[in-house]
Image 1 (tube, helix red, strand yellow):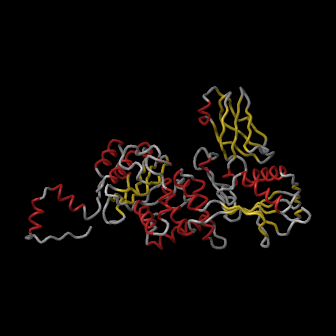
Image 2 (cartoon, rainbow, N blue to C red):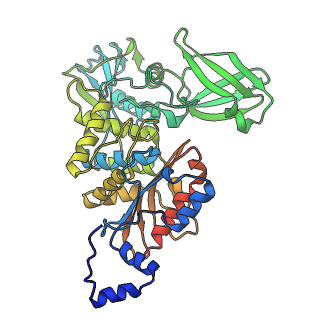
Image 3 (cartoon, rainbow, N blue to C red):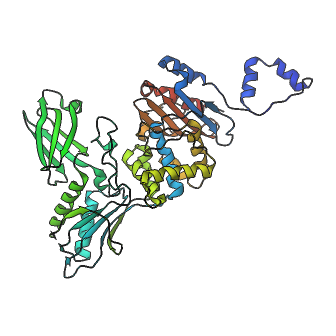
Amino acid sequence: MPDLHVPPTSPAARALRRLPLLALSLLLGACASLQAPPEPVREAMHQAGLPAEALAVVAFPLEAPQRGLRLRPDVAMQPGSAMKVVTAVVALDRLGPNSRGRTELLAEQPARAGRLAVPLVLRGGADADLDWPTLAWMLRELRERHGVRELAGGIVVDRSLFQPARPELGQPPFDEQPEFPYNVIPDALHLGGSLLSYQLRSGAQDLALASFPRLPLPALDLTQLRFVDAACAQWEEGWLPPVWVADGPRLQLRGSFPRDCERTQALNVLDRQWLTEQALRAFWAELGGTLDGPVVEGVAPAGARVLVRHQDRPLAELLRPVMKSSDNALARLIYLRLGAAAARPGEATAAAADRAVREWFQAQGIADAGLVMDNGSGLSRSERISAAQLARVLQQAQAGSHGPELLATLPVAGVDGTLTRRMKGSPAEGRARLKTGTLRNVTALAGYVPDARGRLWVVAALLNDERAPAHRAVLDRLIAWIATQS
């Protein structure tokens, strides 16, 4: 806080002595940040039974960063998905808003008379839009534009952009539902988002499984699955993660499932290399082509030539689902793209991404003490950041070249994304743009709020407590308070 020196005999000093204590405190508060929660926030914390140390906040007008509110600003806390702000800002700056991932089909030699004697290479380049129709279309282009009919050398699947190439292998599950979409750990191919849509249909004592697209599936092992009389809508309550068994191969379903129930759900339950092979063989056969060799994982030869290429949307567009819908897998993919662009020879991609973030912090003059990066999505028990660091990231984003791009990705209070149902009827509705964060012990908000005078405030608010997710109103009241400042 700057010194406020008033000569004791001056008219100003006499006027100050006549001011009520509250007015004096408001005058002094205009010169610096508040160090205690505003009354609406304090009341909400008290009603929720939350201790003061559960909350950390940094909030200030962009034009006057010395003002505003600072509560436990330098304590490293769990941000949940608010950590996606860091990934987005650093990726926009280091990769650029027009950065695009790609998928390529390559070969070391040209086809002769429709026959490709060497392996066709399917190389993943962190293409976020590589869905099943896109892969089928790329094979169609190979067939029709290049005249290839016979893949005599088989296919090599190259995921080597990231190291390790299969980052999901050997990773402990984040929670009890590793097969659901929010838990996907992407690799550089990321075909179909590493998911397949399944239709599960049960009878009294059996279950049929079909996929879309219709691909060959492994044998089903139902010995560990019980059929129960329960509501179909609650099918997940007894469901346990299926087990992929390489022998066969077969898929072992476990837990319980309601009788006479039909559900459709995207799941990550099959080994992704096995699934990639099934898709390649099925799509190529539909085009009338033959595939005589094996489908294996490997690396493209140095002299391989690109025959077909697909690019995803520019990064600035990909960040909309990352931020508005809080897409964890896509955030992780972008974080690894950041690492791949910065990686040194032999360096693990996640470690390179961590280094890229810290180098960006250093370049912006932001201390990285206490910062813990894991996968850049916030779906982590270990990631940590302080409210001050998160606020500085947001501040620097608006000072840089890509502030408008970031602003356009953030959920709008009461309007869309993860804020669709929040802050309805509050002064922040339709005005505040904030990234949310939620874990079992975390709720967070980070972004920008216009106040009553139209000044844009930066806000980073982190609430860490086992009861935090049930009391998001604490942070909603904070945002409403900021929106009414004048």
